[in-house]
Amino acid sequence: MIRKASLQPQLPQHRFMPPPMKPHDVFINHRGVDTKARAAGLVYDSLCWGGFHPFLDAESLKPGERYPEAIDKAIHGCEVGVLIFSPNYGESMSCLDELIQLMETGKPLVPIFCDIEPSKLRVGERRVQRSSAEQAKKWADALEEAKGITGLRFNSYTG
Image 1 (cartoon, rainbow, N blue to C red):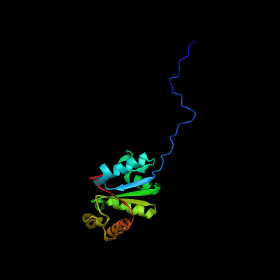
Image 2: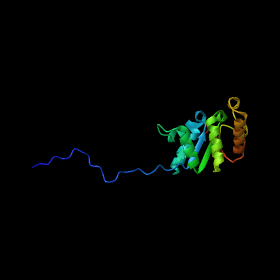
Image 3: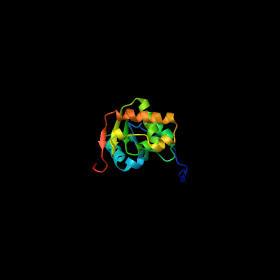
């Protein structure tokens, strides 16, 4: 008598569970419209090539992930923050809020001044007008503190 092979797939005794996702070593804070194509991408690629696991929103967020929770998790899980300041950085509420969060963690921060002198960094006028005086002051204080950290300069026109 010939036995028919079972059509039911045989499940292994244990299921494979992928290893948990490694936390991000570095959080890259940047204004996307100013820096994503050049400075942020170069920093991200260089860190990856160096064996680090950086967080860059366009590269690290997964479909369906909640943006605020993913950012919060990456900021609190990283070891170092890279701050890429650009001419329109101060117009972004997200950038400014992330800057405050990074500073509150007390983790080392490395500023990169991309196409802007540190002395020119300011909270954008529109951002000030659309926010409470208390919030605008927090952002301004965070930018002032960041200006005092020795950083790198990057010119996106000359590389």
